[in-house]
Length: 543
Ligand code: VG1
Ligand code: CO
Image 1 (tube, rainbow, N blue to C red):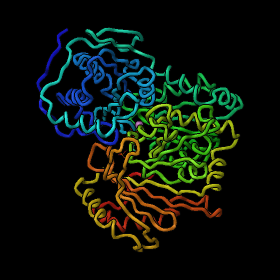
Image 2 (tube, rainbow, N blue to C red; image 1 turned 60 degrees about the horizontal axis):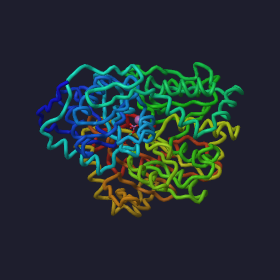
Image 3 (cartoon, rainbow, N blue to C red; image 1 turned 90 degrees about the vertical axis):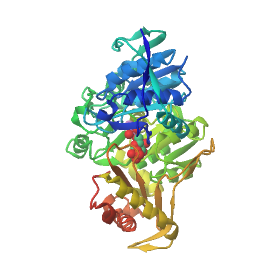
Image 4 (cartoon, rainbow, N blue to C red; image 1 turned 30 degrees about the vertical axis):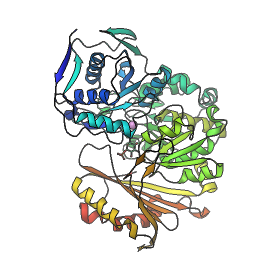
């Protein structure tokens, strides 16, 4: 089979964002676009000659064709072996596990995660390193630099590889091993949570609804929840992955997982509800009539993780992304463990996990994970919740009420303004940034600013510094507003406004979040001049 060096020129806009490169599918399908980025990735990591790579994706439109291209390029670049999930499928946490389990040199994950899929929607690709985690900023910077100087890429010509059959194939000198995408991950879960205990919970009539949102978690959830843990068939809904996610938006939040929310707030609601995103790394948790914010979920898991076998000895520490509420900080303080604050995106947790400084991590965007992999892990979070529910015998709402009674409640919400004109979004952020140093002591409506700054992060493990990670304004009385621009969108700019208000008065722990957050929201909007600058009078999505 002939190997080809294809001449190419750099393509603009191949800068990886919060989680790999995300673009409209149509952009990824343009001539040389994917090939350029894959070659830049290979070059950026020092080549793949003799290396072993894990390859898989969330099954969205173009996943199949893209896997074939990546395999032919890995072959032409001299890779020794590619381990591929059957059908080219792997959830993000399963890919992370497989890289670690098989001591691979890294992996390519094809996904735009919670972004919709389809020919007119989004596609993405990211590289994870040998620790199973997303490439660090140093690596993504090198990859980006390579995209700007590329003059050719290497690809083998030939037939598509049959990815449907488990086993070993050969592509020239390269071995391709097709593995069951679910088996190793399911085995890992059995070493973390108490399967017999959860099985007994279901056998006792406990009811659950898991919404896989037509995405990659379907096969994992069917196997683990229904086949292994004995939850009744039908517990998993929308469990058949489809290339356009059933024309839905596979983002597990109360807006996009509305079917599940209606069920959980309706008559005869199950005891427990959960959903996962496109690539299976996010989770949403909802009890009967009780939505749990991701920030609260991280705090709850931190407080009770010791009930699961893997964490019986306690947690080394915890980490949260900066915009995530400070609920987990309060639990960590009471446990006497360290709590780290990192920039948005899972790549910043890797060093802390590798160094054994933290055991659990989380983000406000429905991401929680632990040191079992180097990605956030949707189904793992759901299983840990089940383990805690089984051990305590309490309902979700009782567990939350206990948590708030002990630590106070961090009321929390995120407002997203999508597809904003990029220049306007940037000028709003720029104008606010300039004013931050002067804000301390300022009174805005009912709120007084305590301090304000732009978040930057000094990695305590490798000493690297990340600047410009979001504007934060802390108000007196435990309130905070954070502004940042999304790094995963594919159209215009998305402004995220994160709102938080701590409440410790026992009489005010069950109030409506929108009421509790009104003052901090109004102050944030006034300070930023968001409406005047962007023309937006209301957010597109509130979670
Ligand atoms: C968003 C979330 C962030 C998450 C990232 C990837 O990034 O806010 O917390 O790590 O998506 O998640 P941004 O830059 O758009 O705010 V996933 O599940 O889409 O890979
Ligand atoms: Co995801």
